Image (tube, rainbow, N blue to C red; front, side, top):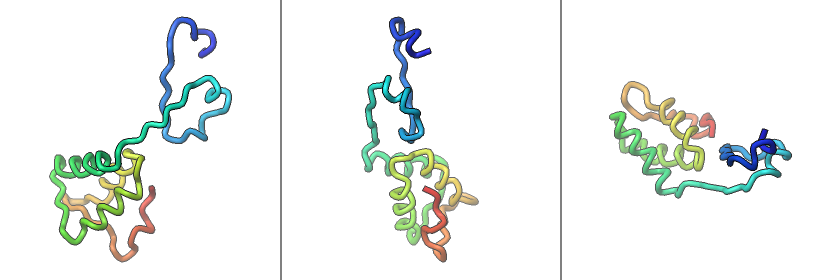
Amino acid sequence: MMEEYANFGRFILTCNYLPKITEPIRSRCQIFDIMPEYDDFMKRCIQILLTEKIEIPNDEKGNLKSLISSCYPDLRKAINNLQKYSVNGKFTLNTKTGMEDVAC
């Protein structure tokens, strides 16, 4: 399909994991590695928590930063984990197990 319509249009493909794209498709594409700035990534995660009115206890702020950092640059995973640990309007990471159970 890409070759058939190459003269008439352009394709924009996005992915999170380039190695999962087959080589024949990759060879026909110009690859741009676009990553958000770390500070913008962190601000966006905090903004989501504030918008959703999630309380962040002072003793959890370090855990929050570690969680977000471990997911960088995958914002979708960061948001999923923020949701996972934001039960009943409060961010709480299981501090007994630390970061071992965080899937980023």
